[in-house]
Length: 274
Length: 285
Image (tube, rainbow over all chains, first blue to last red; front, side):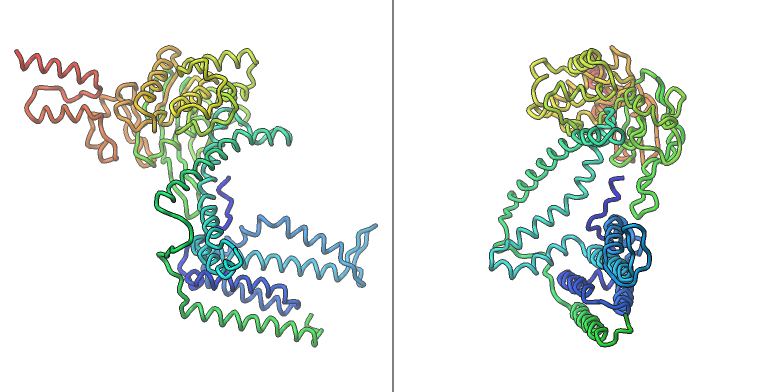
């Protein structure tokens, strides 16, 4: 049950997308998210969706995994849709009932926001699915480096993220074990009202916190025993190097951005495309 | 109360890339009052097997019968099953959470809905059984030593007055004294209260000394079963499974090889002492 949680899950495969430099992937994903807010026409969304489909195909990650990621945010998507559907003011009224009104504009907004959200989630989960957590944090560390001059502890942030990601599966395992042990002593997590349910979490949370602190202390000790002292003078085993394919990806992204912006400008003049 | 396991199979994460068959068509019977040792290499399915016995995990196929009744037949009765079959996990001290030792041990009986008097009685009796003195009852369990914590956790299971006690490596990571104390408590429980005990262990010495019957798990199957004498006679097979016979039996095998007239079915230190004294007398005479 508890293993269904798939935050930042990595899907191992051999694909051109997996081989891309993590820094490139982060920047491209960021630009892609920005592009989603530039796009404003149906034509534009068709282009974005088609391109995303191509990239997913190239990444060899099964579509099943993408859909699973969407399930967890289904409520947010539905909520956004409902709010947009009923709250958008407009002239073309389609349906009214007492104080509820649906306008053509509202319907259009609702669909547009849903499509945007789905594209956003699928696009960004594609990055985490094709990049190992280590590569990802290395990439973030590199990209944050310029901010060091104004006092942002880039290395420390990246190290904290690495450790946090590393411990997600460990703590999930631990939770599973503790739950089973308490169940063996007759603990019941499923029945009762809200207060009883909240109380039944204490026998899980207390041991979990204690073990998390113990692990943190042991890890700190192990790191110090190997002379870890932060960022200064540290070298890397895997140095990130931009390669041909990374430059290709950058050029393709630039072309993509031009198309998206072009479509937006064109839409301003050619209203029939909406 | 007898436990019967029929064609039990368990597959973890079925249908995914992480699919793993942990138990493969296991059929066993554990009669009332027996002291059973469960041995096997890491990943052989021991822990998965014992977690099935009190319904913490459900079988992929097959059934577990408790006095002839499938434990998963009536979900409402699962709690009763868990009371009757006490399960102490590996490193059970990591489940402690209460403010005092007494309250932590009372967690199980309270969940079982006993009356305050019954709870008080079973907590005290459980704490005495594991040999904890009264001065620790009101202490926080986190102040205690590793061996004491372990005993508090085992008392937490005992306080439910189970008819069957399953212990997953109760002595792992303890010093020799802590180990002896816990094994002694388990032995007394078995002898005095006559409860059925299933002991999962990596120590062939402990198993040889304590149990009536051994079940050997290998790659998800119950590969061998029998009395310690029967099982340890098959040293070669055990070694193939990554296990071994008790260390003293190797000493005797070597003695035999060097031409001394000694028995080779010696598995406990006690037996070894007897045999060696006899040998020394013979040599002198």
